[in-house]
Length: 71
Image (cartoon, rainbow, N blue to C red; front, top):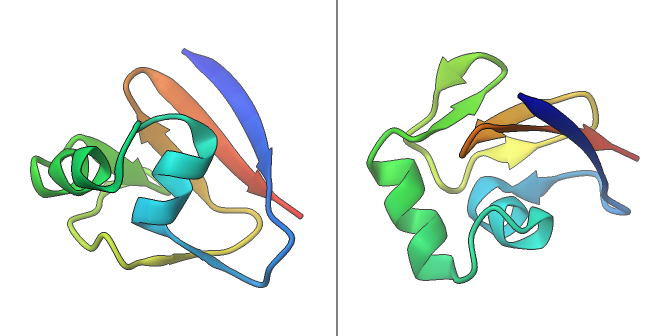
């Protein structure tokens, strides 16, 4: 599994927006489907909340890639 660092410049970013920003989803609709289908892990746990606030230090796994949220 490859790891990518994704830098945010705000205190937090919502999960669905993060998936688009990081390139894990092409559209908001695709991001919503990934989350609803349980295909996204946040800090090692399945996450079904697409509005979950991610902060620097959080880890997101989707599609075989781990994304590390950094500031």
